[in-house]
Image (tube, rainbow over all chains, first blue to last red; front, top):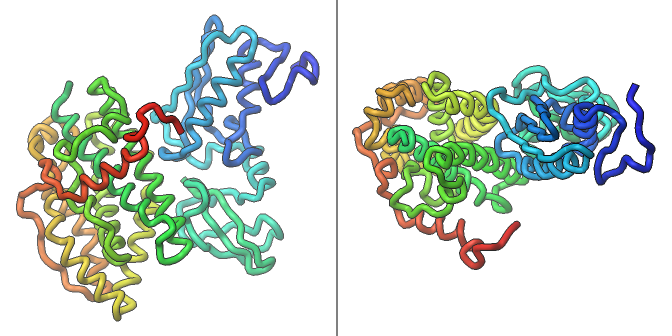
Length: 173
Length: 250
C-alpha cells in the first residue's frame, strides 16, 4: 500500500510520497506525460526501459518512439526537473537508448485505453496501408485512410464515413 | 579515430540531412494538404536519422552533432550530389525521393549486418520508420507514370535528368575498400545497385517504361566532396538565424 504524504504535496511541480526512493521515482515517471499525447505517461507508452538509482544518483534509460521526435528534449527536461524535486534525489541523468527499438506493442493496455480516450485510435497489429481502426467517436467500422502521415511522426489520419469525422490513429511501428 | 568509419558516417549523415532539408521545403507548397503533412513528417524522420549519425560522428571526433551538421563547409560534405539539387517540380521531387528511398532501404538492410553495433541498432529502428516513406514514394511514382499526360512527361524527364547521378549515390567514396574490409558496410556499390535494380526495375516494367540501363560508371561527385552551388545555398540558409546571433536559443 502506497501512502501519499498529503494531497497538497502532490502537484504539477513535483512528486512527493512516503515510499522508498525507487518507488517515488517510478511513481513520478508515471505522472510524466507525453507532451503531444498528454493523457498517456512515459511508462504506459513503454518508453521507460530502465531506472537505476544509487545514493540519490538516478540514471534513466528511455526508448525514443521515433528518432526524430521533437518532443524528446521536452521529455528529457520534464524528467530531469520533476525527479530532481524528490527529496533524496541528487542528480538525474536521462539517456535515450537505441539498444531496443520502440515498437507499438510496448504500449500498455492502460496506455491504449487512455490514448483512445484522448481521441487517438490504437495502432493496427501489423504494418499495412489498408488496415483501418474503428472510429474513435462512434465506433463505426466504416472508416478509411486519409493519410498515413499525421500531425506527429507517430500518428496517421483516418476518416469515418458514418459520423463524417476525421480522426487520428497511432501508426504501427 | 577510425577514418573509414568517419568517412562512411559522413555519407549517411549528410545524405539524410540534405534529403530531409529539401523535403522540408515543401512545407506550405505541396500540391495538396496531405502531401504537405506527409513531406513534413518524412523530413522530420530524415533529420532525426541525420541527428543520430551526427551524434555517432560527434562521439568519434569529440565534437558536437550541431557542429557536424551546421559548421562544415560544402567541400567537406559527403552527401550524394543529386540530393542537394533544388526540388524542381513535384514529379522531380517524387522521382528523386523514390530513387533515394529505395536506395536507403538497401543501405539500411545491409547495415543490419555491419560490424558496428550502433549502425545495426540505428538501422533496425530506422527501417521501421522508413517503410512508410518507401510506400509513399512508390505509390506516387507509379501513379504519376500510370496517369499519363503531363504527369508522365514530367516524370520521364525527371528520370532522365536524375539517372546519371545514381552513380554517385551508390558510391562509397575514397574509403570504399577500407569501409568494406572493416565490415562497416558489407556490400560494394555494384552489389547494392543490383539489389536496388531488383526492386525498382519491376516497377518500371509494371508501368511500361523502358529501363534506362545500368548507371554505374565508378565515379563519384558528392561522395568525393564535389558539390554544386546549391549546397552552399542550403548551408547558408540553415545557419541564417544562428549566424545573426550565435548565442540565440530556441
